[in-house]
Length: 218
Image (cartoon, rainbow, N blue to C red; front, side, top):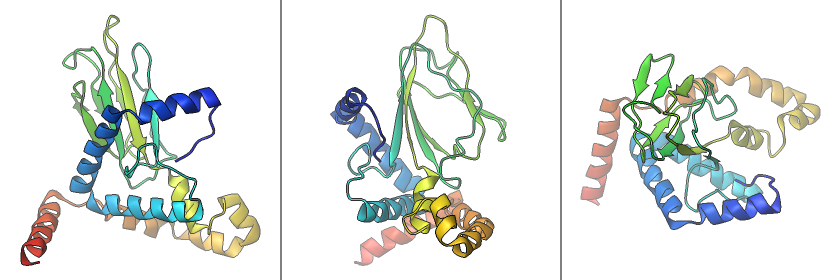
């Protein structure tokens, strides 16, 4: 969606995200999101449509993407520390694309702390993972190498804004404290609903088999 940027930065972002190769990357990631996380994909799409109904001026970084926000991380040696992206939708996934002249067998690996896993993410690789709840970081690369990344993500504030009837949480509390309190008390049930959108491998196979059967029967 739209962020407030200087005219110079805005022009650069419009040019970058308008590049056909960048748009093809997001289209590729869209297919992965819909295939592996169909329930999240559906929630993302419906939420974006609702937000644009309230504010038609809002646009995603790339037309047709289900990720309403994106960041381009550039520099000589882009790596991230061990964060959780807590401002993102908690029970959801983000997109991470990496590229650059570096040796993926020696550095740039993605580390998931709680899962105790290290993933070799080669240049040109794309990964979808729940960045808001999993502590993650990258192993450094060589001093003579370079690496950059593009992310796509779903800010949690978008759904909160819609659930608050098109108000910020603070404004909602000022105007309708009771409704806001009920909403906050339902956090656990919203979390459970969000987690239910992550299907097991067997459930995912059944889902697509059932969809294929519906197509075959017309």
